[in-house]
Image (cartoon, rainbow, N blue to C red; front, side, top):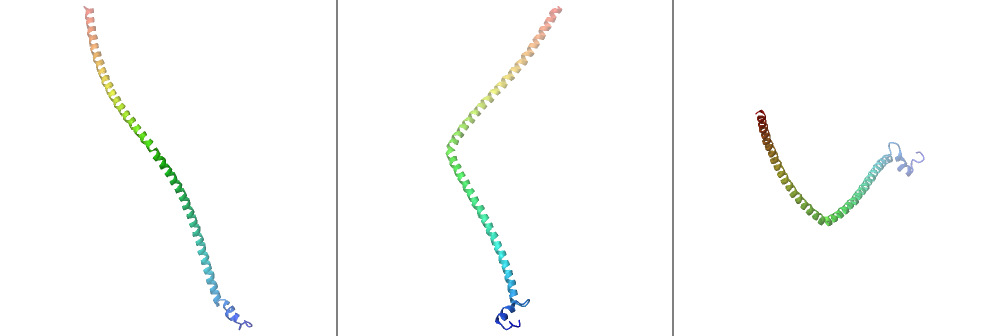
Length: 150
């Protein structure tokens, strides 16, 4: 300081580096803080950029998948339109078969009713004739006993 005390370099620059009194220490602290803040901002920016890239990649993949699904759906629709006439013919055929089946069912139900009626009549006739035959057998047996006793 003794030799350099009057030199402009010392008085305007080196003197400001003194501990706890120099303005350069404060500027250096401020610069260090700002540099740290800028690095943190840069890191955030890089993270955001990476997230945006990832999101863009996902959106792009989703768009490709959606396009593939759309292509498949359009192809299916085309096939459906082509097969519509065949389906309508099959539907008409099935309707005819259903009607025929219903008619057959009605006929079978009628035949079942008739068979049940005939069964009931036959059962009644069998019981009636059995009872009549039993009475005639009893009367025949009584007559036979009477003859034997006489």
